Length: 500
Ligand code: NDP
Image (spheres, rainbow, N blue to C red):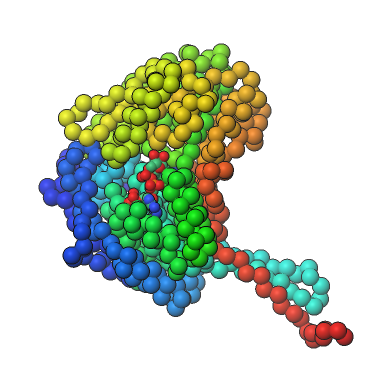
C-alpha cells in the first residue's frame, strides 16, 4: 500500500515538465508553455511544453527506428515481460507522486487517484504475462503437401491519444498491452492532464524499456493531436475521447495512410433496475455509477431505467445516497467527489441542466454549483419526467446528471436501453437469473455489469458497440488488437508443377 504524504498541500510553485523523445526528457526550451491550474483550487500546478509538429515528427521517427531495428519486438516475450514487471513495481514505488499530480490536474479525490494508480500497476503485471503467452496457430489438416501457420506480428508504430477524465488509468489500460505486443508508441495526452503520462515515460525508461519505444508529445488536441492522427508514418492509432474527434480520426485515417484504428468513444449507459433487485445495493450502485469521477466517465450509468412499480421509492433511495456524498477538496482524504476537470466541461454540464428543465424535465435534486470560494464543483443532479426524445436522455452529458425513465415490462426495459446511438456499457440489477441473463444478452453494450457497476480489471476487455467505438483494449483481446495476422503456407516435398 502507498504511504500518504500527510497533510497534503498544494505545490508552492508549479512543476515544470519537458516532453519525452527517444528515451530522454526534452526541456521546453523556447517553446510556449501550457500552465495547468488545479480545477479544485484554481492555482497553477504544472507547466507543460506546447510541442511543435517538428517535435512530433522527431517522436514518430524515434518510434519508427526503435520498431524497425527490432530492439523491442525482436526480444523474447520473457524479456519484454520483465520490463513491464519492473514498471509495475516502479509505479507502486512512485504511486503517491503519480496520484498527487493526477489529483492536482484532474480534480479527482486523492483516495480515488491512489486506487487507480494501484490498478494501473496491476495492468502492467498482467500484460507482462501476455507478452509471453501471445501466440498464433497452426493448420495440420491441409493434406500431406501443405502445412499452415498463423503468426501474430506487432502492428508497428502506435499513436495513442488519451483524454483528461482518467489520464493515468486510460493510459495504463493501453500502454502495457501495446508494449507487450512488440509495438512502439507516441502518446499525446490531453493538454490539461499530461503530467502523469510524462511520469510513466520516465518510469518505463528506468524499468529498462529501450530508447524510442515510448515517446510523449504534449500540446493541444487541435494542433498536435490532429497532426498525429494524420501522420503518414503511424501504423495504428488508439483514440479515447469524444465521438466528434473519433469521427475526425476515421476521416484522417482515410485521408492519410489508412492507419488501423482503435476507438473508445462516448456512452449513454443504462442502469436497468427491476423491482426484484436488492434495491439498497442497486441505489448504491446507481449513485456510484453517476457520481464517481463527478460523472466524467465514458461508462457512467447516466440513464436509470427502473421498473415503474418501484420507480418513485427507488428515486428517493438514490437521492438519499447522493445527499450523503462528501463533495469538495480532492486533496482531503475523505472526499468522494471532486471537481469538474475543465471549465468547458463545467459549462456543458450546467447547460444540460438548464436546457433539460426548459424542455420540461423535472430536477428533483442537485444540479447546483457548490460555493467553495474557488474551483468547480456541481452536486449530482437527478431528473424525472424525462422523455426519450429529450437531449438530456440522448446525449452524453459527461457529468453528474442522471435521468430516470420508468418501464413496465422486460421487453420495454430492453427497448429503452437500446434506444441510443451508443453501446459502451450497461448494468442490470435483478435477483432473477432469467431476467438478468435475458437483459445481458439483448442489450447492446461492450461492457456489462450484473448487480454491480463500474467493476473491472486487467483481464476483461473494454470497448463499445455502435457509435461507442471500434476494437477492444485490455485483456488478451486488447493485446491482440495491436498485432496483425500473417498466414504462412509451407509446401512439403516436391512441388506439383503448373499444368502437369
Ligand atoms: P476530446 O475528444 O476533444 O478530447 C480527447 C482527446 O483528444 C484529448 O487528448 C484531446 O486533446 C484530443 N483531441 C482534441 N481534438 C483533437 C483533434 N482534432 N485531433 C486529435 N486529437 C484531438 O474531448 P473533450 O475534452 O473536448 O470533451 C468533450 C466531450 O467528449 C465530453 O463532454 C465527453 O462527452 C467526451 N469525452 C469522452 C471521453 C471518453 O472517455 N469516452 C473522454 C473525454 C471526453 P486536448 O485535450 O489536449 O485538446
